[in-house]
Structure formats: structure tokens, C-alpha cells
Picture 1: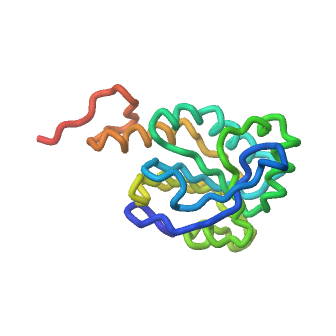
Picture 2: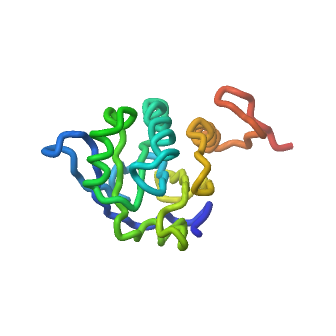
Length: 179
């Protein structure tokens, strides 16, 4: 599995950005949103139970991430057409403010090392990637356990200080000073 300090791999994936089939589809790649921090999170499959709770929670924090010069990319192994259908039919996803990426060939999940071999789906992995394309944070949950997007935001805040941040540090708290 790629981890902190590794370069995030190149990718070029179909993305769903709206509910209107005429404007829903675009492409996203590692060159998209230059000079931005990237929050890339994977969920196992569309039309499941835990996944929409996480996706909606990231959606609610989208403006907070944007305020920190960060963009969110949600990714699963489903097709862009599956993503569109799910957005159109799930109340919590209709106004989703970030793109849903289709890793249908499982290339990105495989290159990152987050493809569950037994199930053939992505694990619940989260990556924070800095503007230079370097992975600065990785978290991977079991398929049955949802993650905490608020914690991802907290870690982003800490990384952006470029300082030593103690346990449970929150934006605005004092950082540690090396003696």
C-alpha cells in the first residue's frame, strides 16, 4: 500500500458532477485542480448502506475543505452511470458538491494498494495529498466501518500548519515548540 511520503499515482477517471445526464460527466486526473490539496476517499460500492452516510458527511464539509484550498474526490469501482443513477435516486446525494470518480478498471485502487482482493472492491481508504502530489495522510477502515470526515478535516488543518501538533489538536490551538 502506498503511504505517507509516497507520490500519489497518476490517474485519469470519469467523474460525475451533477444529476443532469447532459452535464453530469467529466474527467478528473492528477493534473485537475493544480495547487490544491486533494482529499481522495474510496468507498466499496454504490447503492449500499454505510457508503452514503460517509459521502453525505464529506459533502456537508465541502465548503470547509474548500476554505482550506482542498478539493474532495470520492471514488469507487462503480461505473459513472452507476454513480449518476445513485445520485439521482438517493436524497442525501442529489446535491453532492464534489465529483464521484469511477475506478471501474480498479487501476487507482490497485496502484494505491487499497483493493480488497476477496471482494474486488476498494477498502474505505482516505488520502490527503498535498499540492505537490505527495501523500501526507492515509487511513483505511474495514468494509463495515464508516470513517469520520471531521477527523480528516482536523488532520488537514494540522498538516497545513507545518508545525508540531499534539494529540487532539484543533485549528486555533497552540502548536508545540521544539526545545
